[in-house]
Image 1 (tube, rainbow, N blue to C red):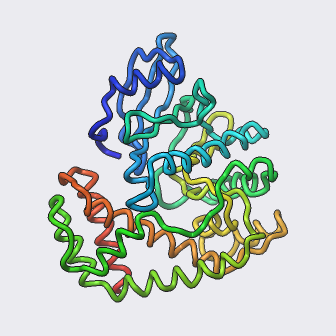
Image 2 (image 1 turned 30 degrees about the horizontal axis):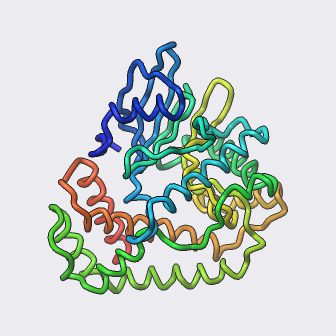
Length: 331
């Protein structure tokens, strides 16, 4: 995220750190990294460095009427699974520091959930292609470690129900486009027109997703602990080896949830995975999670522009990504 969120001051964050972690912040600075959560680097009074994340509950909710406590609970389950996996001995997991009450994430005001992490020094990577085959194979090894976690660890995570966050809001815009709710910002009108001009293509994508999700629902025994987004941007290379970060999407789900974004298209990663685990990835479920990624991006961006927005740098970037996605669907 490029700019700090409205409604979450550094003063509030300093207070949350003191109250929930007993940490006295001597310095705090916003870090414009990643996309989804907001991040700060914190230095405490003893000179130790920390990494702080904040998630906006409105963005993380599954539906318009979801209570905040449900949204926070889902995040806590994901982060608790990461903490349990690290406690099991998987040092590649960058897990949150539990608060004084033992929670991996706490509320900051009424609109944000905050988590604290140890600061990890190392090489970071951007979303996109792996930097080489060594990188890809290293991440595959980490993912295999996640997927083979024992049931006691997996039990901390919720199970994927194949619901897509903000799908209800997308459905409303599809039904009303090009008409819709009152103007909420510079992109509210354009997003309704964009969806309205591409209703058929979007509808086909949603129908295909629902068909594939129904198949996956019939195979509950395939569930393993999954990270959810093991792309290069969620990896780091440290002096002690590779690390996997950003565990806020962890779920019990079919292994294809992670594998679809690891395979370069030649089946090599899938073959290596099958040889290591005895589980053969299924093409239909790989397709399921490829389609889901696009459905999720579409739904969250439509939701963003149906809410009040100002036309920030993040808004501009989201709008361009949304236009590119819809353009690909209609090509």
